[in-house]
Length: 290
Image (tube, rainbow, N blue to C red):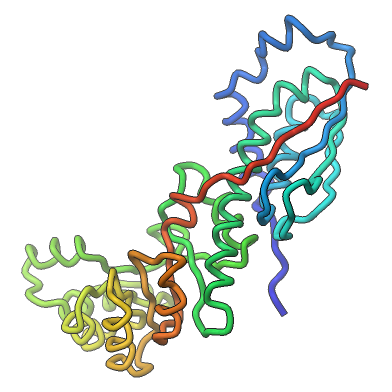
């Protein structure tokens, strides 16, 4: 059974929402102040304009209710659900001024996170039936990593290490610097990483060639990341590794080639574009006075 989707921590959501509202000047909406009676009431509906996967409703709700807690926000679907263009996602009601001031921030979060979930689901669907899992990377919007990783999960994907403190990943620049310090080959670099890493953490090593794969294994790597390899190179590397390490593929992964990469035998496929290049899902908020 799939693990239930858990929303980001409340304090994380509120911190992101308050920063965005402050950035947008929501407490000093001069247009609304000039046009809207403070006593005026309104209701509205969030509507999907494209087919996609919804993510970010708890964040949108926090944004809509932050300025005035009398605002009500009622969801009509759940995060992680596929929706069609025209689907109503949530209803909101409250003081019109508060709804107008928070509209853009609420939509920004909902559109961005739903876009990530939608692209993630496309990758997950593309490898369905294989043993590969789709992962995100650290290529996230600064300050929004918690939320964007949540959106990846809403799309059916999995999360890679959260940050530099939660996983050992030896990459090309680590190797270059280590060699300047006197570690002459990758096997030694990996061995030192293994010796210095917490015993509870796996050591993952990036490899760009078959020779580097051999050296990574000799040094005791428990995960080998095949970076920017062709399908044929991935297949050869998987055969060489022969189950001695977990195999991850990354770099240049597209919807067109991801299934071939998965069928080559890797367990993990990390895709930076899930968070750095996902197009926003088109969603609108349609407001009416009450």
